[in-house]
Image (cartoon, rainbow, N blue to C red; front, side, top):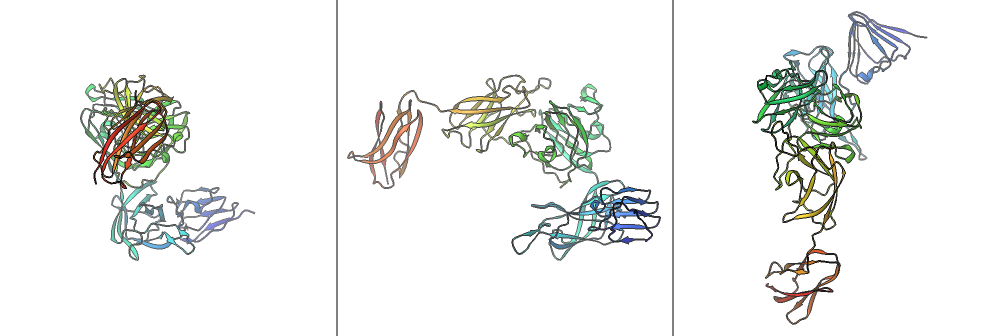
Length: 580
């Protein structure tokens, strides 16, 4: 049998236990407030004009409920994580949005965004009464070795505000009277939390460099002249999702480009330009259709940085992304650590249509953006970083000789022209070397699409002989990226060699170099001046190549010593002097 419950209370604050077949009616002048931990489940919930239904957490109302009516319906925006660590109180005296106090049904949330923080810690729906007391929870160790989740003691306290009337989330700027970090004192007292409205995100465009850029904020006016705010780059182009291809070249009178949050744009100027993007913070939620088997430049509709895995990880058909500054996302190769930054555009490739692709909603953890520049390269190779990158993944290096060490460089060449490279600093594979493409329209020198890729491995003193096998690509731009395996071929002398030891005189160690033109059994021995053998340094079969060994004479007395090398077809002897 179905039941109908009619709320006549002016303000009811309790747990409602109804079955899914029941109905609930809230009439004029009456309110139902569902706090965290309470639940309401009914087939129909009707809020008549003048009535009010406020739930602190959306999970407090069952998903199957049909909610309708002309009254005030406020379902919590911020989820309460329900942490169980030690209580810590945050008291807020006043909350404002653009100088105006928040209203009943608006929300305020407390976040831990410091090192190791779990993000949102606690949230309340404003009931119109100040001061607001918010109970947060601190991470707490308990007997037995377990830990109750909560905020990290010492991390900064930050705030978010939800304006229910406009369905807008804002970053809160707090003014602390006491406290300010989790666990500081017995409580934190905040005199004012003021919503951050427009923010400014500066983006620097280096001279003579193609950059990809996009809107990191929601501007009042999306026309390019309004967005750029008086900055006039030489060239800008993009593919608007509804307006099609757009070109901005003010010197030619082309100024009608309209920007969009989901689109990325190429931008260029002979001199350095700084664009200050001004508008409301954004945190995803937009959609765009991605065309499979084609390269697109996407926008990044976020006001803070996130990883490419956070943005693209839910779409396995997205196989590649780069920022045009040397950083890539190639999930099939385990390359997923690219950080995405506000104001940048991103080149992506999907192997299938995504209709639509939805930028995931991710909270803006900070609106003070620390932006990384292009992937740093501090090697000896010289090339022009044009801003239009082409990635060459070095998937494997076969180097049984151990010749590739820190400081070795992998150069990328078009013919004899170096167009990019990688400074080897780690044994982790795969590695990503970046080539830089040219642009004849803008008279930028770089690699030319369709030309063959040539790799070189360059040591401190020599260029190593290598064999290169491309598992994909092999010419610039032939595929989204290229991938290669490198095998180092050890240099081989034309004849047997043995060099004078160094240093000489020495105390107590010195090094001896020798070369073998073929695989052979080698014996390298040390004798004193009386012809007595004092050490065996080498006694084995070795492959052809160059070798270097160390001799430690720490247990010998000063004097002249003789070292001799013997093989099937060669022998040689040299003197060295030990001085202690």
